[in-house]
Every structure is written in C-alpha cells, then in structure tokens.
Image 1 (cartoon, rainbow, N blue to C red):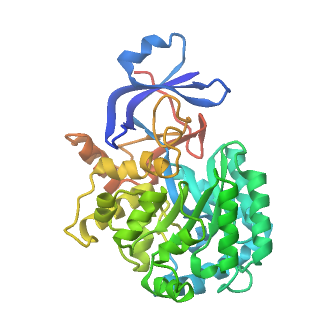
Image 2 (image 1 turned 30 degrees about the vertical axis):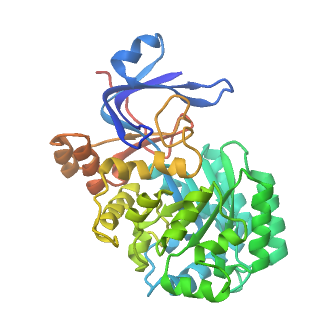
Length: 438
C-alpha cells in the first residue's frame, strides 16, 4: 500500500468536479490482489487512518484520473496531419494505403509501441481502439497493452466491400477471425474486445448480420463503428441501405445498437436518431479535432443533452490532429460555442474534463472502474503540473476558482502538463517523479 499527497481532482455522480487542495490518494490491493484506489479525500481526514503507509509528497501537483479516449485508430498514428478535401478522399488517399502496411506483423508491432507511448505521454490510460482488418494487428496492440498493464479495448476492422486490396477482408473469414480474437483477448487481464464494422458502407449485409449475431452471442463485448460523420458518406449509406430509416438505424437493423456500443461522430442526427441512442444505451464518441480538420460538421451538444443520450470525448487520431486530451477538450469548447443549430452553449471546464474521464467511462459501461479517483476504482491516475510552462504557471497562479484553474489547463496545457501517468498502480511512460517532503 502506498499514498500520495497532492491536490485531488475527481467527479461526483452528477458530473461536477470535486477538488481537494490538500488531498491524500491511497493505493493498495483489493481482495483479489489487484491495485485499486483504497481511499481519496482530504489529507487531514484520512492520514490518521493509514499509520505506517509510506506517503509520496507532491507539493504543487494535482492528482487526476487518467483520461479515457473513446475513439482512436492505432494504425493511423502516422496519418495525422495528412491533407485532404474531406473524409472519403482522406480514406482513399492516405488511410487505406497506410493500413495495408499492417499486413506485416513486424510493422504492426512497431507502430503499437509508438501508439502506446503517445497515449501515455498525453495521460490517456484507457482507450477504445480500431485496429486494421488484419487479425495480427489486434494481437500486436493487445500484447503491447498487456505488457504495460493498460486497460485497452480494441477490435479487428470488418470491411468486406468498397475497400481496396490490402485492407478488404473476406466475409466469412472476417467473422471467424473476430470470434477467435474475442476468445483470445476479451476479459484477459485488463483487455476487452470490440466488434468493429468500419462503417456501414464498407460492410456487406452478410457481414453486418454476422457482426450482430456475434454481438448477441457475446453480450459483454463492446461494439464500435462510425456514423453520420460526413454528408457524402450519409448519402452513400442511404443508397446502399434504402430500407433503413436513417444511417444510424442501419446498425439497429443488424442488432448492433445496445449498451457498450460506441458510435463515433454522430453529427448529422435527427431526434429519432438521438432517441434510438438513448433507448438502446449506445453512446457517441465526440471527435471535435477530426470533425474540424475534415470539415465534417459539429456534434450537437444541445440535442444530445435535450434528448438525453450518453457521450464522451475522443481524439480520433489520425483524422484527429492530436493525442492530447487538452487539445480535444478545447476543440469541444469551440464546437459547443459555435457549432450548434440553436444558440451555442458554453461547456463548463468541469464538464469538458468529465467528458474525457468519468463521462467517457460511463459511456463505456466502466463507471466506477476507470475515469475517477474513488475507492474501488482501478489505480490509473495522473500527476499534473499546473506550472509546466511559464505562461501556464502565471495563469494557474492567478486562478480564482476551480473552473478558472481547469480552463487554464485546457487552453494552455499539452503533454508537458502530464508529469507522470500511473497505470495499474505503477508509473508508466513518463519521467520519474522526485518525491519532496513538505
């Protein structure tokens, strides 16, 4: 058992932030021996309860939950910043040619290490991740994640049509491979599997039907895909599935809408789509940097809040332009202010941070497991330095309240703020902290 003394950031059930200026975070084994948060709260109230437990003092630092990325493509690590006229040309000219390189297992293994390094350097300790259509791309990512003790959810992409040679898979074999990967990786340590149709236009009816049958058979696996990102994509989907009420309802027609189903983008929705998300328990992965970069549109926060379905933030690398949750939260703030069909809403700093931690965990069905600093949560947490840069230090020093402090970090922060990321109770992927006595 070990304790850490610093300021603490956590979240209440209503999504509001809780901040303890002088806090104590106690980490130790649960009944099964797994490292979890045993206690979190005011130092004065907790310190006497743990006599003899060593304490690392971190003056001037903030302990915060590890970020949760609801939608990211590990094979697109090197596709960031590739110029294109829009989503479909970007896929054709950059993404598909690059993903074809993952036919080489050694290449997939190398990119997996770089990808995980970037996640951890930016404070992301849980991610829902697309691999490629090659089964060994899943093996490469899962093996690397398991070695680091990460909570990782990933899946082999399903795309048996309208895809070039090198990434297009065979319908029957893709489903056989998916089930084999579920049995190999799902529930192994901190790993989980996601059934992953790339998007409806890339999948035949037979492949979507098979994916739905696997989702019904394996109820505790996740589902991930894209929907309603781009207007040209929507027209294409409607042409291919003319009987469907909407693009989103295609997935419902094939049994792919339920809890633990995460759909990226969800931009061009009507209220029936929003109600379908709410009623099935599916959630949206809001991807503001990629939506802005590709000119796809803006997630309608007002509609999501009014109808009441789950959502959380995502980097969507490589359409997304940064692994940094700070950049993603700032882009979401812009979308809330400027990208709404009704007068814009001002997303509070506390809400933005919640969307990338506890809110994203809730969307995954992992509330109380990751994304928060509460007793019983897995021991994934960050040590943040609010003085990481000279300008940030000036700004945070003058913060009058929690909102001003958090917003300063969102606007001015980057990977330099993340002094250390603790994964499963151990420091990983960050410089060593020098403990200081008060």
